[in-house]
Length: 348
Image (tube, rainbow, N blue to C red; front, side, top):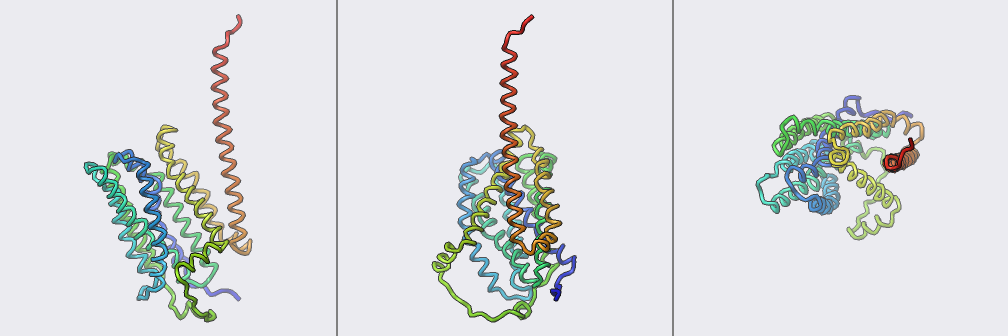
């Protein structure tokens, strides 16, 4: 029996466009906030990195808090949509605040300004918005195929937005004259785009009623755990540990990408190349997402597809690392060989 369909194509596109808003924030911060703070404001990279790490602790706590709050919410808009809608206004304000750090302020005050704005954004408003956005897949449809399509759609928007932000931001800032004022203007423009796309995404879908969501489910007795008991259950769950490991590797990957602008500027000598590398990274991902629903259907689920994807991705990264190391040492060998030949006496 064919599953009931709950969404039209425009609902799926509308939902996916919400990741334009999320990645306007994420891509700008992940790729450019460090170089803005170090090269424009003059802060120490080590101190900034430490402040970001401390902020992540609050982020871990707020995830649990907002998840519980969304679950308890009852409104005309549903459970998740109010948090997604109103949370993003805070995201926009905090994003602009980070890029509005006064250059004539004392350095301690600048660090404090950044930490407060970043923590409010990362552990507060962005978490509320993003958890609500992710929760919507379970609240607006009960069709598994539609949920896969929604996931593919949102990540196509996510990678596409990241690619554009990474590709155009350096040139955009330069056209605006560079410096703190240019970064501030760019942040304001991106924040406005984010507010518009987030609002359209919220309004393009509708949550199912609690009765409809519960339809067909067997009633289960609700079990209550203390925070300590829940933690013990989690750390003994191998699947939770596997997800944690994968998440840590993803964060390491993201951190490496965040340093890309420094590599382009100070090693390759052209920060504009960051956009070229962004195209090379994101376009294959977007193309892959186009066929993900088909592959999930062919492989009868997400597990086999994830396993194959991670295997191919890991092999590809090892191959890229090998080529980079081989090319680097080959270049050194050529340079050494040429120098040696030039120093050797020639006959005749």
